[in-house]
Amino acid sequence: MNSLIDPFNRKIEYLRISVTDKCNYRCSYCMPEQGAHPEGNHSEYLSYDELARIAKVFAELGVWKFRLTGGEPLIRKNLHELASKISALPGVKDIALSTNAERLADQAQALLNAGVKRANVSIDTLDPVKFERITRGGNLARVKAGIDAAIAVGMTPIKLNMVVMKNTNFDDIPAMLDYAIEKGAYLRFIETMPIGSAGISVMDEHVSAERILAKVKEHLGKELIPFVDTKEAGPARVFKVAHSDAKIGVISAVSQHFCETCNRVRLTARGVLALCLGQEDSVDLRAPLRAGASDDDMKAIVLAAIAKKPERHHFNENRHNIQFRQMVSLGG
Image (cartoon, rainbow, N blue to C red; front, top):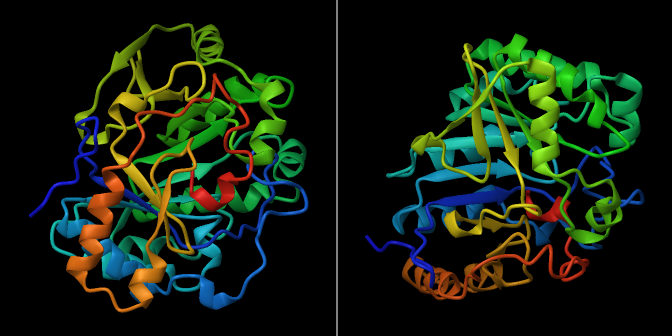
């Protein structure tokens, strides 16, 4: 079995699969108010069989961790069918879901049965009015019901992702902390990132990870102890709350990038392999797949793509370098 090693000696073991670039929300930092869906027909999206075939190629190259994302993945019908196909692949150890959870309550059990063991949920506030404003129409009660359902069926861990914005929800950090601790969930605070026109538009609301951590400490009145979990290696700096089982994390893509440990690439719903969240580098996998490429052909294309993976993003140096690439199409 080949291993995917990029030019900077990073082992690529994680593929994020976007199943759709559509979303039932319009979060201000992710998507322009008018939406961000390019014109096109349904045939431009990879089928579940095509997505599973690409997953197979990656699994045979040593990728063992997969995440189903979007857009909002749960608006694509029967997502559990794709999860079942991927979980059956030799070598696959972990399948996770990223979702806004509005439709999770009805699908949590089927997804768990199909191999999705954990979920990340985007939730930026517990204030229903503010939530509706941030998401441009989202239903907080349904999201909370989705979180409860995921916990009830046994998905673990449940991670709550809060994008922190200075004049929008910074003051909601204490309530979010209390909620996460009550639910036994792992709360991660995310800095705004200049990805796409929507992301760039909210950079004036940027709050640094250090300021976020200061707010956390102020509310909890407890020490935050740096925590390393090799099984859950990712972009977050993780802390345990002293004298408790609670964990919090901060994802500081702008103030303190984490590129030196990047172990992932992203597949869009239209079959584009994005090599870096903060760079334009990408490779089309849909065209050779539909032209009849063999698995070995696809492996060669993937290996050549990984050989071009850039060292890092440059959010601080150039906030506009990816203004035409929307976060909603990249799967976060």
